[in-house]
Length: 282
Image (tube, rainbow, N blue to C red; front, side, top):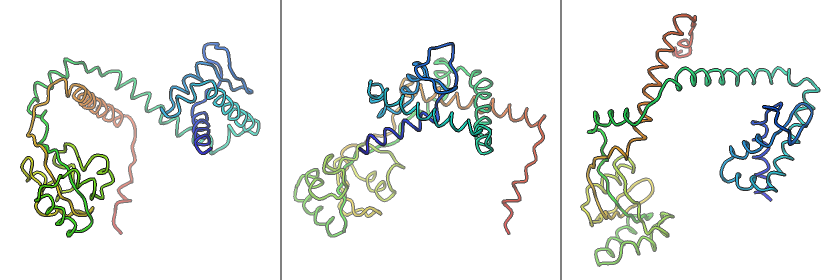
C-alpha cells in the first residue's frame, strides 16, 4: 500500500513538473483535456526521465495506464484552474519568471560557452604528458578492525589475538560495527584523509600483517586494527584518468569563457551592489 502510494505521488510530481501543452509536429494525442494534450512520445519521455526504481513499473501496461490517469487528473486541475484565471495569478507569474530567468541563463551559457568547447582525447593526452607527475595514487593500506565500547573489552581481545585466535572470527563475534557481521571487519583499501585521525595514524604506522597492541580510541569507541596489506604511491595510466582529465580541461575552459563573458557584460550593464552593508558588524 505504502509503495503504491509512493509511486503514485512520484508520478503526480513528475507530471506536474514535466507536462507540455499542445502537440509537437502534429503528433496524434493519446490524451486531450481542454487545451492540454499528451502524445505517445511525451509519455515515453516522462518514463525515461524517471528514477530507475520507478521506470520498470511505469514501462509496463499497468504502469502506463496509471501514469496516464494521473496525467489526466493533473490536466483537469490545470484546465479548471485556468478557467478561474490562475494562469495570471501573481504567485504563478512570479514563479514562472524565476524559472524563466534560470532557463535563459542556462540556454545562453549552453550556446555561448558549452558549445564552444570541444575537448578531445588528444587534448587530454597532451595535458597528461605535461603533468604526468601529478597523476599518482596516495599511500594506501588495506585494513580490518574490531570496534568495541570499552578499553577493557579491547584489551581482552588483544590478549586473545596474542594467543593466536583468528582476527576475522573475533571481529564477527565482538565488533559493534554493524558491517562486521558480514565483512568480518574488513575496511578495504583507504588512503590518508579518509579515516578519523587517530585511526589513520595507527593504521599507517603498522607494518603489513601487524595489529595494534593497544586500543585506538575514536569517537566511535575502541578499535583494534589489523593491517593486511600496504602499497605506496603508484603512477596512474592515461586510460585510468582520461575522462577525469577531459572533465578538468572542460571546466577550466568553461571558467575562462565565463570570466570573459562576465567582464564583457560588466562594461555594458550597470551594477549597483550594496551587499557590503550586510557584512558590516553592528
